[in-house]
Image (cartoon, rainbow over all chains, first blue to last red; front, side, top):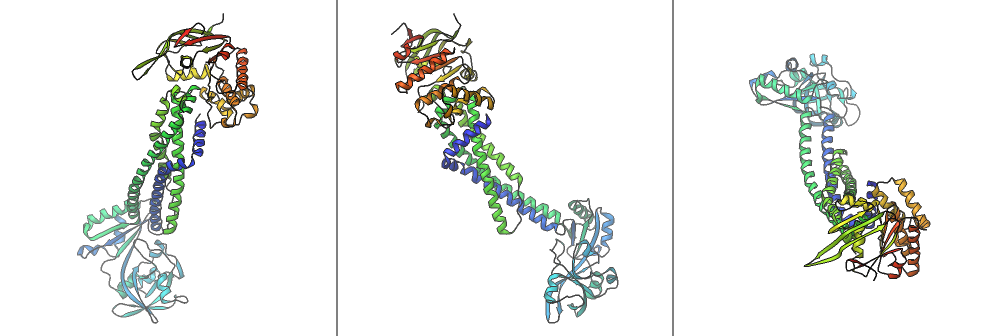
Length: 393
Length: 226
C-alpha cells in the first residue's frame, strides 16, 4: 500500500512538474543552506584540526610571561622538575628565542634564532633536507654550529647546499657559525616555527650568543595514551601552585582545536537554525500544494472511498504524498547544498568534509515538515463526504 | 425462497437545506433477495439515488435499519462502513468514476489494495476480470484512451473484483449510446445469471422492465407501479 501511494504521489508530481518544483522551492533552499552551512562548518573544523595535527596536537607549550624573580624556575632543568611532578609527559624541550640578523656573503636577513637541545628535532619530527642535526655533544661543547630552516637556507644560499658553509649572526659582535644541517619544509606548530628560523645548541646560544635568564618557551610532548588537554590542565595546576598563575601561559594545540571547533560548531549551528526557518516556511508551501491537491482530487477521494478506502487509508495516502514531496525536496536540497559547499571549499582551498549529521538532520527535518504540514490537508481529505466528493466536478 | 441480501426497515433520510427539511427517503421498507436482478425506478429527485447510496453504505439513514448481507449497518463507524463498501458492494456509476491517472488494470486492482490482497493476487484477479469483460487487450490503457462502453466495462470489472454480494449500478447506461448501453445491459444480465445480486437504479422505464424485479420510488416512498 505504501509503495502504491508513493507511486500515486510521483505520478501526480510528474503531471504537475512546475507546480511541484515551485512548492518544493522552500524545502530545497532550506535543506540546501542547512547542508551547505554544516558542511562548511565541518570542513573548517577539520582543516584546523588537520593543520594542528601536522605537528603539535600532542604538544603542550608553556610560555613564561612578564619579568619577576618567580620566573627563575624556568631554567634548563625545569623540564626534569616538570616531568617528575606531572604525569604523561614524554619530553620537555626548552627553547630560548630571540630575533637577530644573519649574513652570508652579501646577503643580510632578519631571522629568529632558537636555542634548543639536540632532541628538539626528533621530538618535533623535523626532517632534514641536507646534512645532519647538531648533537648532544655539540651542545655540551657549545660548538658554534647551526641548523637552518628551509626559507633561511634558500635566502642565504640560493644555489647549492648550505651545509659546510658559515653564516655570521649578529649580536654585539658578529660570530661565525658552521651550518651542519638544513631542515626540510615544515609547517609551524603552535610553539615553534621552522622555515624562517635558525637553530643552535642551547648552551651555545647561552654562552656565545645571548645569556639565557629564563627560557622563552617549553614544548612538552604528551605521552601516548594521555590527553593533551588534560596534561595541559595538570601542568597549569602544578605551575599555579608553584609560582602563581600570573607568570606563564599554557597552550596546547588540542585545546585550541577544541575551542575552534566549539566556535565553528556554535556558529554553524546558529546559521543552520536560521536556515531551518526557511525549511519551516517551505513547509507552508507543502501545505499549500497539498490543499490544492486534495481539492483537485476530491472526486478521486470519493471514488476511493466508494471502493472501500477507510478515512485512515485516505489520510495515509496524502501523508505519504506530502512525505514523498518533502523527501524529494530534501534530497534535491542535499545535492545542491553539497555542490555549494564543494564549490566554496574549492574556492577557498580547504578540504571538503561531509557532515553526515547535516544530511540526516535535514532529511529528518524535512520529513517532519512533510508530516506536520501534510497532516491538516490529509485529515481534510480523509473527512470528505463520499457522496459529495463523487458529485464534485 | 432464498435469503434476503438487502433489507431496509422504515428507512428515512432527511437533509436539512437552509430552513427546509428535504425528505429524500421517507419510511422505505423493502428487501432484495440474493441472486435477484432488481431495478429501483423512479423519476429524477424521487430518492432512488439516495436509496442506492444508503444500500452502498456511502450514506447513513436518519432513522430506520439497513441490513446488508445479514449485517446491520446502523452502528458501524467509518472504517467498518468502508470495509462493507469494499467487501460486500461493488459500485458502477453513470459517469464511470474511473481513476483518471491509473490504467484499466490499476483501476480494477484498487479495491483489492484496500482489501489487503497481495500484489500478485491483485494482478491475477484483475486481469481475469478484465478478460471476462472483454478488455484483455486494453489493460494498460488509461481511461482517457478508452471509449464509454470500455470505461463502463472497466468499472464493472472493478466492482466485481473483490467478489461482492451486491453489484450496485446507478444509471450505468445513462452516458452511453443505446447500442453500447444494450451491450452493458447484457453484461449485467450475464453477471446476474452467474448468481450475483444486481441492483440497478434507473429512471428509464424500458431498461427497468428488463430487470426481473422492480421497486418504484416516488417522493421518497415506495409505490406500487407508476
